[in-house]
Amino acid sequence: MFNPLKHIGHALLAGSMLFAGTASAEGLISIIVTDPSNPYWYTEGEVARATAEELGYEANVAAHNGDANAESRLIDTAITNESVAIILDPANADGSVGAVRKAVDADIPVFLVNAEINESGLAIAQLVSNNAQGAAVGAMEWVDRLGGSGDYVELFGNPADNNAATRSNGYETVISQYPEIDRLAMEVANWDRTEGYNKMAAMLQSNPDIDAVISGNDEMALGAIAVLKERDMLDEVMIGGFDGSPDAVEAIKAGEMAYTVLQPVAVFAEEAVRQADHYIRTGEPMVEDEKQLFDCILITAENVDQYTAPFVLSN
Image 1: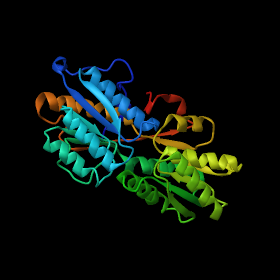
Image 2 (image 1 turned 60 degrees about the vertical axis):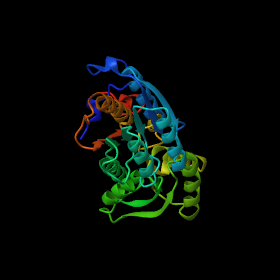
Image 3 (image 1 turned 120 degrees about the vertical axis):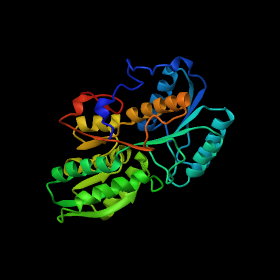
Image 4 (image 1 turned 180 degrees about the horizontal axis):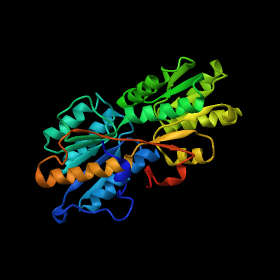
């Protein structure tokens, strides 16, 4: 496993070391993310772009906003532009397979970040957070703060993204060991703050006396917090998130969110570009394993002051 505390020198921070021989790097690296209006994906795209430029490449960042058709068109553009590599956060575990295959058929190496596709052997590498580990770490903190009993609701991410099910299943694995904790409802909110707000409001209509909320990401959790604040319920309900976003960190500092689970997006975004550079120069993968997991880190009020930059903890 990759330890993000040992790999925090990402492209938004000065001092990253270049690989030997990168002076000859040239060409375009196309970077395709989900939605840069979300700080998580913004960080992903900007770190990848800055790293590519640092290594001597041209780079651009585009977004598919979760639309597999838009993703396919962006892959077409990358092919037309004769990209030397593509860094892709896939839109859909199944629906993105065709887009990746199209790039590979055009002899463009693809490096996936953040989310996986349901086919191996196409991408040179799939670099993702260890979502199962992160979900377990978050759920254990959540159970501890809940005191081992209570009623809760869950906000679920985008069903087309394998990360949503992995996190939810990870939560369930831990929480199911506590028979006095009952899930009263679960709603899909597609990683979105507005949907999190609306789905939280709907769940409260039928379940007004909950003790806690567990969320698949920070944006949905922040939507839930907004509802609970409006109803003067925030002091009564414990909320846990996932991502380590700047807004979540501020919510922890304000005492509004119990914790978040930091995904080292800056780490694997940089690493994907460095692995692409290695492949471009040598024709060989830098890391033998296609699927590479990066462990997540729990952020609570106890360590939140160590948070120093987007999606990074200091030592």
